[in-house]
Length: 132
Image (cartoon, rainbow, N blue to C red; front, top):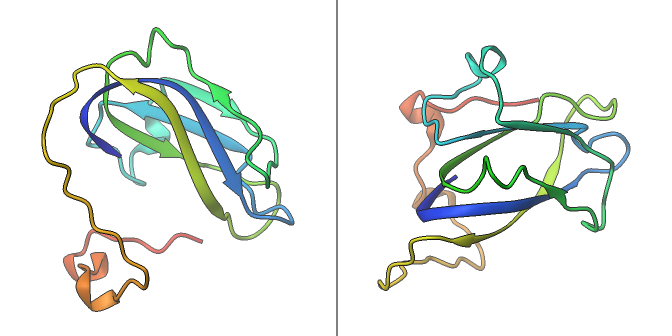
């Protein structure tokens, strides 16, 4: 995720799938835009957590606040799950605060029913990958 302004990230909440499809580990990298699936395993995360299966989203994983006080770009990597062939993530919640607020118009698009034709297909640009 790339943020509009610098943030202080306090905690992360993850809701994953059932029957072992929920992620069991989370690695977080900050202010790095060069991370992809080819090099993520060779880089050291800023922080990592052993997650618990939490279908209700009751758990928040606190960050090391001193290391997450100047975040403009955030990369989350989920290397494993609780034994299923597929990992499912239904919700990622971030708790924090903006440090350099700008008073600008917010441009947002809300879609009740997204249309695939309205969005770029990563497979067409060669940047996307199928994850299983």
